[in-house]
Length: 210
Image (cartoon, rainbow, N blue to C red; front, side, top):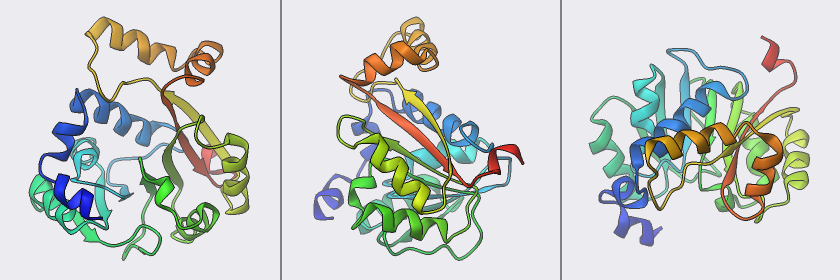
């Protein structure tokens, strides 16, 4: 993780052209996609980096546990969140939360799994209502990922395209149009052939209806 140790200082500000727009939209999807989270629910964020997403989840009234294998990222997250969250140094393949969590998130880090299905099974053992992560459909076969989720016990899957660019910011009207396009399935699928990712919310059968 040495490359992340070197980059930990102001990671969020340097990684995203418009960090607020990007992470605020991601946080809303964590809450709304699949079984809805409520104020006070605990989110465990695997590969949390410097806690940028944590700021937005805390602002939505959630509790936050951030996990990262980089010591420098852990320290950066603790500085950013300033005692408002639990931040733990651990490998995402091995971490087990010390308290019940409502959701587990893993953004930009599924490829760090030693074995993807084993990671899904490991997370399922925590007992969360849902697992939320991003997926590049040009890098990973969606059908294979869904099969791994089902094997791990996540029988319900909600998908949402995520059309907020990471490397450049958009004028507000254009950004709003992109977010609206996320719900236009045929056009969204075309866009995903060349750019952008899905946000995946996987839950056990019946969780959507509780």
